[in-house]
Amino acid sequence: MTDERPEGATGTVDADAGVEALYLGHWDRLVRLSVLLVHDQGSAEEIVQDALVAVHQRWDRLTDQDKALAYLRQAVVNRSRSALRHRGVVTRYLARQQAPEHEAGADRAVLGDSRRQMVLDALQQLPRRQREVLALRYYLDLSEAEIAETLGISRGAVKSHASRGAAGLRPILEALGPDLRTDL
Amino acid sequence: MTPGDDELRGLFHDAVADVEPADRLGEVRRRTSGRRAPSRRWVPLLAGAGAVAATVVTAAVVVSTVDDDAPDHDTPVASSSPSTDSTEPPATAAAGIYYVAETPTGPRLYREFQAVGSTSDPAQKVLIALQRLTTDSGPRDPDYRTLWPARSFSSVQVADDRVVVDLGTDDALVAGPGGPAEGRYGVQQAVYTAEAALSQTLPVAFVRDGRPAPTVLGVKVGDLVDRDRSFDLTAPVNITDPGERLAVDGDTLQANGTISADVAGPVRWTLAHDGDVVVHGQAQPLDITGADARATLGAPGWETEPIDISGLAPGTYVFTATVTGTGQTSDAPAQFSDTRTITVR
Image (spheres, each protein chain N blue to C red):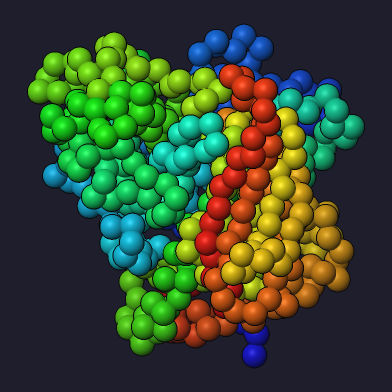
């Protein structure tokens, strides 16, 4: 990420200003991150909002306020996970119903929005850790060390989740084919 | 070959390129302000798109049954919308629907999550959920039942201070076979389900032909009906995951759910095949926060560890969660449970 700290976080910023700076700098990006994880914009906005409130409550206990953004990211990932856990039954049910659709779609021309849906659906079908690692790496552009810290796992585990996750997405990339590549 | 980094970066950025987060700074400020307003009026956005904004607190929104395109809950529902309209929310959302089931101390409300058509319109959200309460829709779990006759709900308006529910048939005014005593649970089925759909505590006004309904399911009601929080209303223990008839492919199963606020003891669980318990254990308390807590109306949560099912033969299993409680009208402890039948593949 280009902006690794809330603006002006020098250790003396008060909680209101600190959280506002985090909002201004990172709201859109974190909501989109959460959409990648939970596949639903309304939930994602709730999750990031709740995470900001949690950072505010904890502000004085964040020993190093430069760490506020790292804590916020962590809160967003954790809350996305627990949102999914409660939606799990429906999500899994839908994922199963959805699976054959991907194959059917492979040789069809895929329009922009349904293509996005396919990517989000494919992400939902990856194991949770792989999805988290890929989203943090390829959407937030975090380093291996930052991902390891955010998820509380080793760098080796980050590597293996990333490579397995990438392999898991290969079919969807192939299905999207040149359509995706020319657009990029 | 594994996809290249640039390709994946493009894929991820493109996947959310059309997501335009709504501006919620005011909401964040209000929630973090020391002078927090006593009544929280957050915008219900559990499953909607960002475009909902604050319409729910400023204006009454009217919808009718005619637009109800909710898929039948027994038919497979695709999770992606075929529409090319990028502002449209996902085609399905999970809604908590409250049904009635028997316990050793009488009927209680049990919540079941169902996949429903997703909408950003709060009134439509409530109507879609309420229509799952009628006998022509009903619960997936065969242990549950509903007290609402077919075509009970014709339209919904969400106003600042109430949810106005239009009853579509006189059958909804009179008591069913269980009489008014049971009707109380029916009335609360609607109140709990409406509040869960909105993620908001709002009393319900039942209306028939433009006038306040004098009785609902045989129960005399006032102009506004609040959620009844009595100890004998909601199930002492309720399973959220797994859902009824879930097919499990993996090596583990993790279950979770809620308990009612006055259950003190642990939640014990069993997984049984043909009546024989094959695995059992005790669940841990789970802190449910944020949107989830609003969807479950603030009930305390529980969760099992991942249960290893890799050694189980494929077949049908019954997952049971049990608590022991002493009702407030009896000294004798009773066992309360909720069950889900699942298939291990």
